[in-house]
Image 1 (cartoon, rainbow, N blue to C red):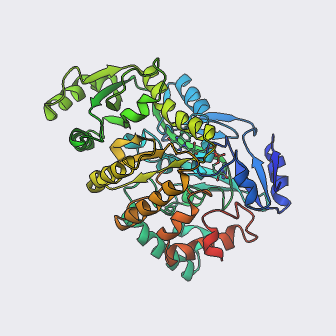
Image 2: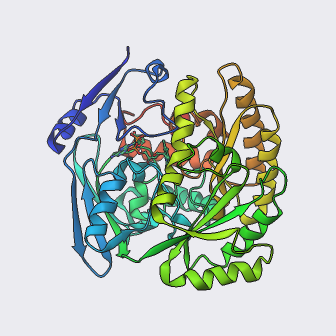
Length: 451
Ligand SMILES: Cc1cc2nc3c(=O)[nH]c(=O)nc-3n(C[C@H](O)[C@H](O)[C@H](O)COP(=O)(O)OP(=O)(O)OC[C@H]3O[C@@H](n4cnc5c(N)ncnc54)[C@H](O)[C@@H]3O)c2cc1C
């Protein structure tokens, strides 16, 4: 046994733990799909302290500034934050499907979710962050300040490295997450680095006034037989981004695993849209007008509770099945550009015909779908080989292989091929400056740069 768990109940306990200079892997709710927190695999990696942040005191407060905002710290989950905002007549702009994940961990993983379609990334909703360095000292980062003006980049070589890095990021500007973190604003220093540069202790996030929401559900034939309608819907929803906050997909395979009380129709795929109640009629009409194949039997309004149950049921069912089969998750997290969406569907179709059980679901409007094999232990190796081939295609399309769930340990071997010397040089520099003893998640994706 090489992993030692420590739980902190106060920030001071965490600061003291940091000052002991030991390798640490932070853990929030442990819902990461790329770190096997609940399996023996973690123990094989090295000696680390599993630093549990979930019991740090929860604090959430509204901030009166020019922008509507909330400040939060400790073990605040997305559910806590949504409930707090709701009571204050506000709404949060990011909704990852797993509501029990911690918000601060979500910054570390650069979490996204359904509402990214209408409201952009969590990264862009951050106004300020606080983090602890490897000495346990707290620092503040401000999203209004450019990273290039931070003291870390005061030397000419460092400024030049950063400019080169930012140049390579430009291609991925419209993606939720690129194969490497953004590094444009000061706050980006902690976002998407998965706890490899410091531990995030507080965040100030933009919110907005609460609106009454509703949902439109569209039934489609299975994408395996015919994806024409899917692709047309994809095209139409791009023009509705200003008024549709989420556009999600669950294929008929995913739905077929759900209990009848959650969903009782199994041979159709569904796409659902989240929108403001006052936009309902107009959006409905646009859909029927631009997609004449649809009618009142294939597009209908559903309530929030039904959608909330549906959206959480599928990824949880996948997690349950995998744990029963004793296999780690075999799922993709690929986002492609709009022009490559039909290519992605066609690659997934090839995988679907391999004879292994599978499901397809996710963030349809963002061309970001999770294909999951529901493999047995015996099938696992060949599924991994399929993914290897798939990631080489993704690389040739210059798409994003892991747009939301991060790299962790499980995707580390795949991401290597997406990093060139420009990124490795920056990772080396940041690690040397911010974590010189390499104590923060030393096995993370930046470790490749340190060899
Ligand atoms: C059913 C299901 C649905 C999901 N849906 C989504 C989704 O819609 N969108 C999405 O983005 N993800 C999703 N995920 C993945 C997961 O929930 C996210 O990656 C989430 O951000 C992890 O939060 P957590 O509190 O569980 O963090 P953990 O899993 O405990 O940790 C995740 C990573 O963050 C680091 N970390 C944690 N806290 C801090 C901190 N304070 N400072 C620095 N580093 C830290 C950890 O070391 C680790 O590397 C889903 C997972 C499941 C199981």
